[in-house]
Image (cartoon, rainbow, N blue to C red):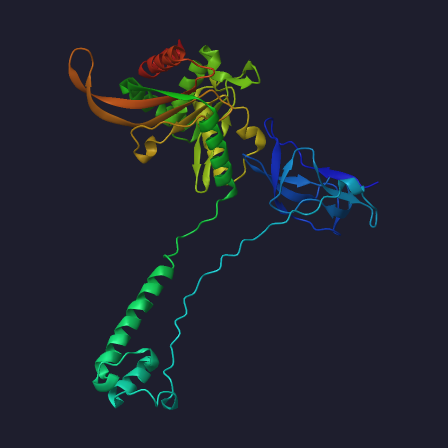
Length: 405
């Protein structure tokens, strides 16, 4: 009996996948474990292997098709073996819309032959001018003696014809072509997910400026230690992930999401870190960040970022996040607000740490200041709770050595 190949569930939140590329065709013989096709989820690309050996009897969906999980996408069996008719699916038809350019073709009107105009009274100069410019003498009212067409009459007709030609060309002249860049698969997914998030999630935003003097000192002290242990330079994002994890651990609703008419709180503190790619954005996840030291977090973030840039992240490495951190400080951005990464309840955005004048309660002094912006889902989190969360995080960042207490 022919064996069904299904769209696999590659992540906890995966509901459908896109067949990115078929690596086999109908009639090919495959062994168990051979790669059949590449599937694109909303997070990563994965290769799907054959569950059995045999001949590819039928491919039910073409490349580019979106298929629900557990849906049959192909059949493998013995050569000539039939598959259930109800499982056969017509291939999706893609209608191409052909854009046709309108062309304005300018036609010259030929002047009547002399034999046709012998009855028209016209001067030789006017006749020659009319022939050169394609002017129909029968349409001209002469202004010379006895209605004779003279040079001025033809010149006036030429001028009128040129005005009409310019008017027609201006009306139908096509605008300059705009550059059109097809949306990549990742760009489409980002557009879909973030549009849904912003339209369906009631966002509200809190902003907080913190004095980062002690944070800068802490990084300077641990920088050589972490570099000696790991060969990596600890970043402010690494430290921030640790601080955020402690805050998310203390405030359970910041690791919650809506599940129907219930609020589901995750027991794990998994922090997502936004990583910019050439084709878009992806959010790998540091699992149980509250239980890890800064050195380990530095190693994990670097490893995840490298895998993200080489398109090697697994579904496990981009799923399960409860809170996301996005840092644009390395590009000189002072501050920004971020859109919540669904189904999470909040996201923290931060810009660059800059030295500015700062009033410390007694006097104005130079200080390192850091702008933080917290975006929250108002269905789960109220303003007062968000303010408490941000204040707790501010205290941690301004007194970072409290982490060891």
